[in-house]
Length: 223
Image (tube, rainbow, N blue to C red; front, side):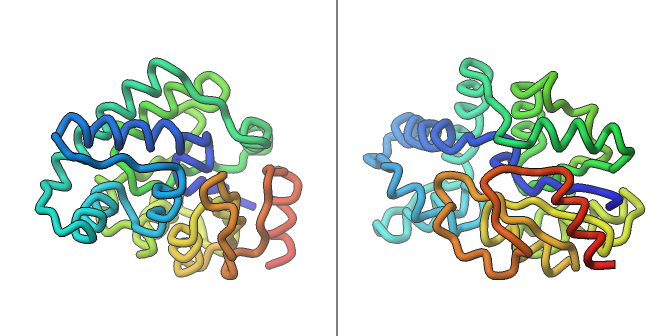
C-alpha cells in the first residue's frame, strides 16, 4: 500500500454536531426562521456541500436565500466552535496515521471543504493528527467540482505520484465512496453517526474503527 487517503473532515473527527450548531447559528444571524434537528441534518447529508444543502432546503420552503453568504457565515462559526471546543480523532485514526508514518506509507487528505476548514480541523487535532503528517491535502480550491466527481482523488493521485491500484481511500458518506471508486481506488466506508445507516455498496468493507493492518491487506489482495 503506497498511500491512505482520508476523504473528509468527518473521517478524522466526528464534527457533525458542531457543524449542525454552526448552521443553526448562521440561520439565526441571517434572520432565517430555520432550525435543523439531528434528524433534519442527517437527511440532508446526501447533498454535497453545505451551500448546496442550504439552497436545497430554501427551495423546499419556497424561499429566496443567498446560500453562499449563509454558508460563509456557517463556516466562520464552525471554525470558531472548533477552536473553542477542540476535536478528538475517531477510533483508529491516530494509530493509522502513526503506522503510516512509521512504514513510509503516504497520507492524503482529500476533501471538498474549504482550505480554511481543513486547517482548522487539523489544528484542533494536533499534535495527534497534524498538517505535517499529510503528503498532500486537497480542498475545494484544488477540485471545485465536488464529490461524487472523482476529480479531487485524481488530483491527489497525480500530486502523490501514485497509482490508484496501490492506494486505499477512507470515506464516511456515499458521495465520497462513489468519487473514490470512480477514480479506481479501493474504498473503506468509515461512516459517522449520521451516515451509519448507509449501504455503501461500492465500498470494499464498512468499519467502525480503522485498523492499519487491515487497510494494508486490502491492496495486497488486489495486486
